[in-house]
Image (cartoon, rainbow, N blue to C red; front, side, top):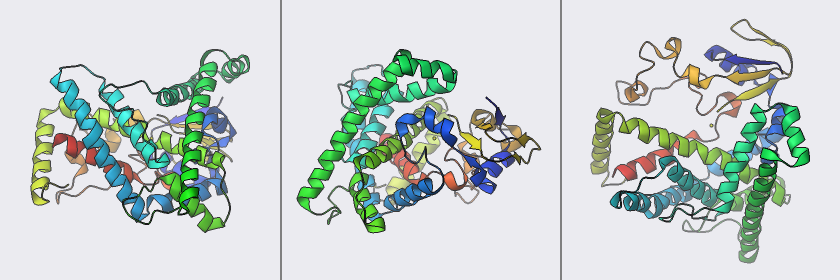
Length: 372
């Protein structure tokens, strides 16, 4: 397999923005990420454009934003903080990443399906579909590591990781299809696809049906809703849980930064009455030359070395290895704009995260409420 690894921001800008149409996901990517179906992460061209436009319009809906804000706040106050208080009072050691994964999975299921799996409770139960989601993601990772002939043989013989993938895939699909059928039945009985009051749920399955009907006047299949759900689960769980885990670990090891954060939160609360994506792979369609001078032939895999980029002096300066949150803040106290092809946590170009402010908002709300 031919592939190129780059950490040059100019190359990334070229691939993700300037010559975007020449770098598709390709059939190999879609085969490896087979469980994602025809969702936005696996699609290209017109199919991708349609799904992106559809999901973006839903995320930007004012009623969805209100629903999401209330959802996260409720989960933090009723689930996350009680669990952390419980383990703290009893001096129980817990895996913080597991806590945040449970928190994020509950949130994304509520947001997309309108159903709370209650993964995050004091008992920290083992939830079958949440475990299946983990196994499915891990099995897809192994498809990247193992030679193609090996994992395809395992799939044919139904052994090893491929057997685990098949089992996990089935469990997750049963859960998702059950939630979708239940939600569609509720909507059918109520006769009002879109909630009429702000207190009613405005999950994405509910809104998606209405939106598709308005845009095309066609009936959407459960398979379409299933693929959309799985892709949004991938987008909304690990991104949040990993970011939160790293945030609290880094802050815990830098007390001076923690003091500054707490001080800012207290000031903000007083002023407002107490309110308050491992690897990126693209496949080339036609021959191309990167800004760095490297010639790229068709079907070449492009890998972005995000770890290296985050530690390069040529990108971030001589203090690139220091933990300095203030590097992101201007002298006026505003967030500094950094080109997305240098800091691609939310990807860049046409495939930029549909609503990074959505994920940032969930992060910020949880951090502030926990610090409170």
